[in-house]
Image 1: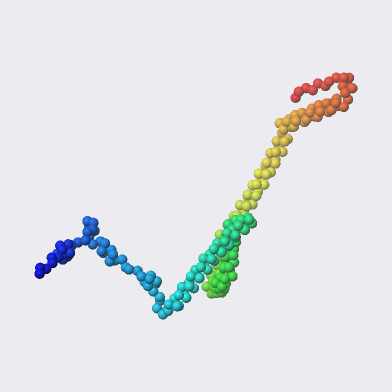
Image 2 (image 1 turned 45 degrees about the vertical axis):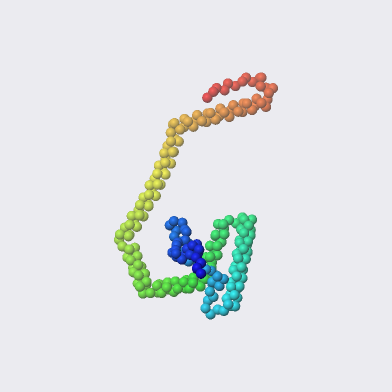
Amino acid sequence: MLAEETPPELSLPLFFPSLPSPSPPGCSGLLADTMTDVPVDSGASARAAAPEGLSLAEEEELRSELAKVEEEIGTLRQVLAAKERHCGELKRKLGLTPLDGLKQNLSKSWHDVQVSNAYVKTSEKLGEWNDKVTQSDLYLSASSTLEDWNEKLTQSEAYKKTQETLSQAGQKTSAALSNVGSVISRKLGDMRNSATFKSFEDRVGTIKSRMVGSRENSTDGLHSPSGAGDQPPQDNAPF
């Protein structure tokens, strides 16, 4: 009995075992490498590994507490934002500017610094250092040396001469100013007694008397209209 022949299409892989799979040119093996590098994620690996020493129940409890704390933080942030907006509205209604708020904050900060322990301790240390410096032999010696120099300087001939020179200069300046004032007064007196000034003064007096006389004549004419025709009109010569 003759053996059955194998169909050619079934025996094709046997004759061509290394036949490559169809792929675009230049991308040979790319799909296979990519699929190999992608890790397969599962439900167990999705959750972060629990720290050592914690059981699953403790981990779940801590995660629940963390979620509650984060929720409380978000709520407090919303409340704080609402309070800040309300505070800004109150300041705007009261007419308080940002500069006033800055001054108030600076004053409060400075007060807090002054009452702080660090500031008090620093002030006490500086006071102790000041007492030590002023009571030290070096400071006392330097003070006595400066006093000696001051005494020697005030008693020196150069200092006395300089002081006398300044005093004489001040006296001369006062005398010069007094002489200038007397000269100005004398010049004004001479000018007033001069013939030119007297002539000008006489002219001013004449003009004044004419103006007063003309005003009186016009006033009399207004008060006595019946006698205005009997008296001849005065001839006021122009000046």
